[in-house]
Length: 318
Image (tube, rainbow, N blue to C red; front, side):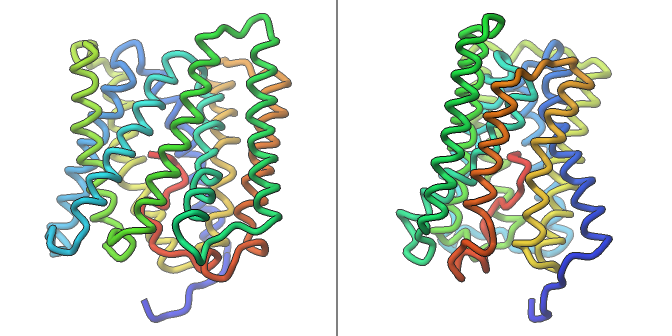
């Protein structure tokens, strides 16, 4: 795209607030329908639906679906990591709250930064960014320590929180694979298709192996959740996100992604009546502060600030 990307304006600010609100609501949507469709089947089916919609869009646009461009192997690996991320999200949501998951999965930029530091020379971390990483991990420690000491928090919930961090790590690893392979030059739709299609197959397969594939009851709530996740979140909102990235300065637009965990916690409290204790609130604030330091435009090296295709650059984690 030859035209210079635009800076922030009222349209992009309003659009990003809407997108962040939608992304923040997805953990709540999974939790709401968990009694009817187990989370792992939800994410497996919604990924399959989204993959079909992306494939249909590519066909309508006349985009070529070829494996001769060197994207097959990294695409399969990215899809496997995508499946791992949402396996941790799905199983974690069976144990912990949507509010906790909405924050902890957003540790992904930390793991991305560490992975890129060791794999791409131009994206080495600076001293300030290492301090940001330490701040984020300190926040995780505070959140876990507070939960451990809090009498009402069980080991099961702490295990779910740990899965949230592992989901963030898997998401970060996915980005590293994309940035360091032929996928970095592929069309965003193709990169997204790899992840959705492979992820759907592996997640439904994992549900079958674990005996959860039959735990499905298509109630109105279940249909509403699946359509919201598959059509609105994993398809329409990501198309809007990629459209914004092609027309506006990516580093400025991406800053708004930090609103997503805040929306997630808010929806968890308002819709699911979840409690967020003081220790987790302090830990979450430290995590978000650390991520801000790592991702801050002024602290990045030029190559990192410019960005790349970045593959699934969605801050929704889906």
